[in-house]
Amino acid sequence: MIPGELNSDYRIRVAQERAEADERRRAELLDLSSMANAPHTRIRAWERAHGLTLPREASHPVLKSVAAATHLTLEQVRDEQRRRVTPVSSPPPVV
Image 1: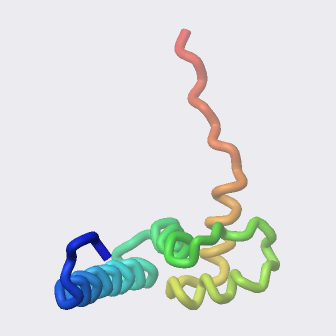
Image 2 (image 1 turned 45 degrees about the vertical axis):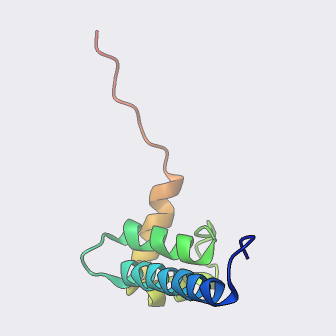
Image 3 (image 1 turned 30 degrees about the vertical axis):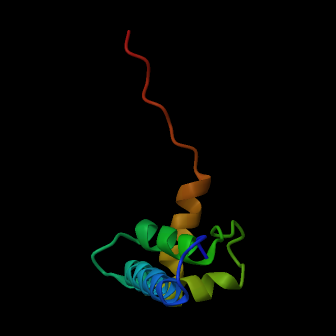
């Protein structure tokens, strides 16, 4: 509570904060499975929603859950794993 805040005002403020948090969560969950988003965007949304990073191991059991939650195939999830592991090549120097 904020000092001097009435109990009724506190309850209203907390209810509003919860409603806003619920709305943010719904939006995050929509990002997880939106076909408008690229696979890497959906996987990043999954990582944010769960506070985890995509495992590097290709046979990790959670990959099936990631695929199901993001409406991707297991192969698409593994493609993102490989993309993250592959170093980005820098363009050749201009002479």
